[in-house]
Image (cartoon, rainbow, N blue to C red; front, side, top):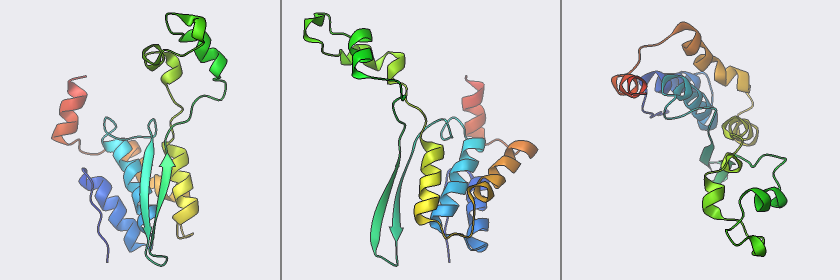
Length: 157
């Protein structure tokens, strides 16, 4: 038995198909998220972050996977002190408002690494990441009916 719920029926059907093929919930969730990245890119996608709470019934435990973006490797405290100083820069403190609106606030997207972490930590071992992303790639290559709400957001820019 299985259930998949998402905001897009095509994405949900991909998850259900994978469950029927022996995937577990973690694997189905990755495939659904990837499909949502194609069918609703204004809501979800590889250019963002991902977070997951995964319940392992055999262990009766909930695990968290944090796929949040990381700071760029080259970013340092010294760079932030130089580029985002408080107005009285004698303290070497960082102005949080300046930081928030600077390019330094942009993180490296974490969704892809989060998918990979989720699969390695909680996957069944029956599917590769490529297997799970393939249905979304097929939607992207072959096309799909765009839902009215997505069409509205795309049309409004």
